[in-house]
Image 1 (cartoon, rainbow, N blue to C red):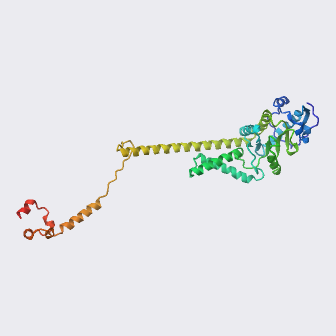
Image 2: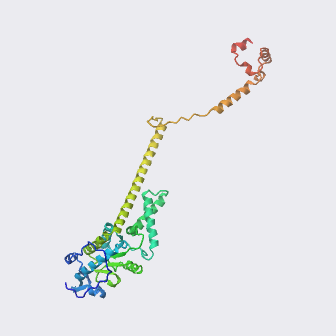
Image 3: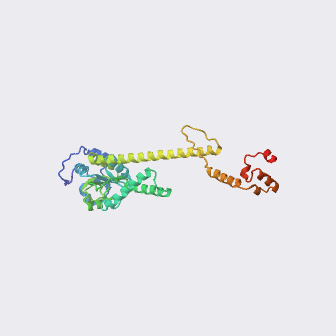
Length: 360
């Protein structure tokens, strides 16, 4: 392919050199990077990047694409030293690639739906993400201090938020650059990046406006192979930085923490269930009168305090003993006979046998 127009790329003087190589034109051809959209759908501003029209389809000039990839690699390598990078690709064929590449190379990503205000209202979004992290830890502990209804609500809310914020956990400040797969689909992300003065790297097809991005890469942004090739190259550049390695470590640390908390909760739940089962068996044995002595089992015998009953009995005895024999309803003759023998009260009868009384 011949260059129809010289491509001028404005970049800063870069000190860092990336080890990532620019793909050969043959590799770009095999990935289908040269296929554009129909002529009727083109954006006139893409004219400088179009090689020719073939059967009503615009063909992208891969020589210029290759040059711009080289310039972008250099620029991105420098930007990674300033901060972390955010990958954005929410359309179907890009979502899984963006997540995979960003996760492997320690970059942030958005691949479901653009969270409005991520750049322009970052502090609010950041609080929401921090809330998500806390909810995940709470759920990993089994939802302590929560009733079942509250726990289910938290579970649903956590899953909903995770779909949107999963890729931007630990993003404590705005990224140094944003990599966009389709500048037309991700127009909200590009608009916010412009407002926040964040450099934009984007794959631009023949229906896109290259003037909206800082580092355009003219290529097919619909082909799975094309997206995969270019996003992986940019991901490798990001993966070289120390900052990206820190993000990988943070993600691994959180994953390990959640797994540990979940394991501890499962073990605690298992212990509680086992203890409850043992208690049920013990109560069953008690009801059946078959309490078996086991090693380490302490049986506590509770003695009933009957001192009160004893005192009451003694008091009653004193009252009875103090009564006169006349109160027993005996005849006058018997009472007189008892009195002559020194028996006047009931207590005096103590120790007297039946024979003694008959003799009296």
